[in-house]
Length: 537
Image (cartoon, rainbow, N blue to C red; front, side, top):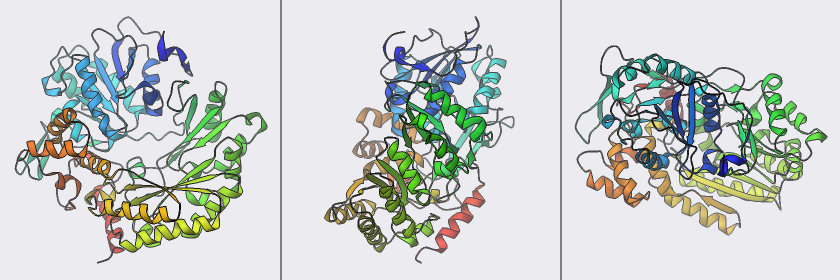
């Protein structure tokens, strides 16, 4: 094997495929260095490669393994909204029609999964035959077994059988009706009574979570071995997809899962990444830290995904500093106590200050903070509170390099804030923060407001957007391209403002109303009402 694949060190043993194994292509719609750094992609690929009834080849935008001439299944793991362009390009390169409706019995079934499709698959629904909603641990084996039952059948029979598997969504078997072509959704119904009216996202409830199946110097994070410490987040900030979409909060067992996984990885590399939305909230995190502080791991380079602010101890900072980490990342969302209450961010200013002091005392040189502009209920004085907070951190921990990364609030499906639109003032507010913090010589890194608008469009989109996505693919991925495409499709899709900026009514049918997340819509509305009760009238 040549090229990038030759540099791989596998942490699993691929099976020898049977003679009649299902020829499968599993793609990541980006370059190899990006795709191979995705833990989800690695794990699904290894799961398929360890089965003797599947013969799997990998496909990236810049390289591929030897592909089967007549694949039966072609899958994509989707982690980034705008990668849809690469999916369409890769399908064309395989001579597969980009729209599911144009495929015949001679074409493979095109399936997809990953965080983007689990959150809201609707803008991409017309491009996929099958979408896997939720955790792959049980979903993937169930998908393969069901497919084997109907492997020789015609396409329609295959799709109807697969639609019976919990968590498997077959978009073509659901009809969306609109009040008018550019109006609200009227209803989303299955084509017949044999198809479930709702598809439920699947949740894996075991205590063995994911770990890297391959380590390579060709990954974007060179030679990193990743271990998932926790899944979901117990904090439930009301805008947060990473929490609400993946509930309940689950932790990997320290003795039977985490430590053996870490030992496996550190046998082949000295770079370890601990992953999860709230890693330091693992109930035995302290013990894990002590385990990694052993002298035998002195040469290990350790990185930790974003940590909860009030768990930043001097010991954590010391351990990281010794393990070649220079800075730590915490999400504060805002320096305003009032705004944090609205979003259910259980955090006080003195805890943020203490985290900065502990980071510096423990030997770290930098602290990165994540904030957000345009949070529902935000007032101009909340921005002043954020500037004041950064100033107080500078005073409390002089010499610590402070960076505030700031995005614009984007509504996400299956969260209490899915009914809110993007605040039109957010761009001005990012500029105001930039100006104020520059005065304080604090490093400010705003995320592009235009990118947030495009993200909101896709995160709240419905099936009509597929036509728009096909147009913008040729115009380029700028906001100007999207505006141009909306103009061209006027009368066929709602305006950009409807998807991005409008506050939606609690009564309206949402694009994902037929797809059930972890919490019922009534619970989300209760959480929303609590937030609204704290907002200015």
